[in-house]
Image (cartoon, rainbow, N blue to C red):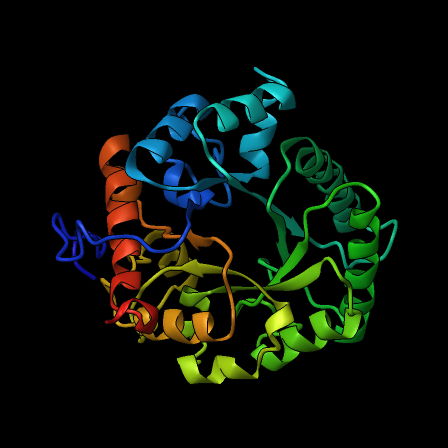
Length: 308
C-alpha cells in the first residue's frame, strides 16, 4: 500500500453531475478521529459539518453514538436538529448498535441497551432516516437468536420513533457473514421497519458480484453505502478496513455495476459514502467534503438510467 493510502490528490471523477441523494457517513466526514479504541468524536463542530455538506451538495450526514454523546454535552437534540434543518439537509443516519442480540443481564447487553436508549431518543428527536445495527465486533450468537432479537428490536423501535432499523451485512459478522445469512435474519423477522443495509466495501470483500444482489427482495433493500478498495486483503484486515478504504471509483470494486443493479432493483433512497481512510481524515475539511462528493457523484453519471 502506498503512502497516500489510496487517495490521489486529483480525481478524474471530479466535477461529474450527481443524480442521486448522497449522504456523508460519519467516518467519512468526522476528520481525524481514532476509530475503535480512542477519541471517536469529531473535532469538527456540527454546524461546520452541516455547512460543508450543504456547500458541496451532500443531502445528509451521519452521526456515530460517541459523537452524539459528545455533542449532547454542549447542545441538546432540538438544537442539533435545528442546525441540520437550517442548512437544508434532509437525510440523517444514526449509528451504531451492536450486541442487542445478547441475553438480558449480560455485560454486553447492558452496554447495548444504554446505547439503544441514546440512539432511539436521537432518532425520534432528529427524525432520522434510519438506525444502523449489526455485529461489527464479531460477537458469536446462534443465528436463530439473532433473528428473534432483531424482530424484538424492530418492535421496540416502532413504539418510539419512525426510523427503520437496518441490519448491515459485513464479513466480520460471524453469525451471518453471507448475503443469505443476513437475509435470513431480516426476512425472517418480517418487520415493517426492518431492512438490509449494504456497503460496497463489504460486498467487494465478500466477493459478491453486482448481479448476485438480484436475489434481494426489493422491499428489504433499505440503504446503500459506497466505498471502494482492493480485492486482495491486506494482512491486517481491521487496519485495512479502518485506514485504507478508497473513495468510490478509485479502487478495484465494480462500484458502477453495484449502482446499476441496485437501481434496477428499485432502490431510490439516499446513498451513504463510508470511506474510512487515514489520509482522507487528515485533509482540510473543505477538501475532504469536496473529494467525497465529487467521487461519489461520478458513480451515477454513467449508470444506465443516465444514458441517452
